[in-house]
Image 1 (tube, helix red, strand yellow):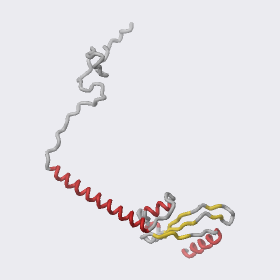
Image 2 (cartoon, helix red, strand yellow):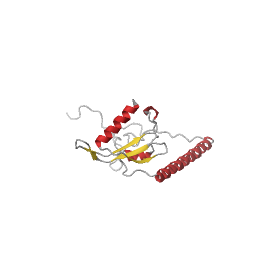
Image 3 (cartoon, rainbow, N blue to C red):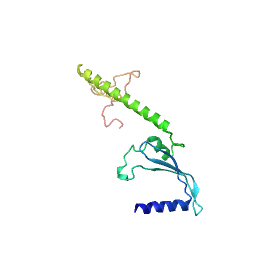
Image 4 (cartoon, rainbow, N blue to C red):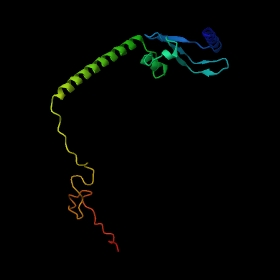
Length: 167
């Protein structure tokens, strides 16, 4: 069956004038191809394609990270030119440096946390309310106004609960 698929692919490419041009490989053995825009046998314009031929042919064996990020960006057309091997090596070195720095940071943080366990725990503050609450800092609102216009706080005074005041 595999030979039939390959034969069909060869025939299809021969009839469609599709030119598959290899632009590179990665360290995993994946091959990357560019197919420029072309007209098929019916005269239709077929847009350019960027494809990867995986070194591991079985889809079940594919894992995230099997395609380097630089090549994935090229495949998804977020970059115009295919990455160079020097660029990939430079980015790989940078990722390793960042990973080492983050590991050093976590180790220092762990040591700092262990040294802070020996200190007394911080005192807990008592929170009575929020500053935007209408009764902040007061036990209950009073019936009579207690402030002048200069020191008025919203919610510091409530009118009397007199139901017949407009009669």
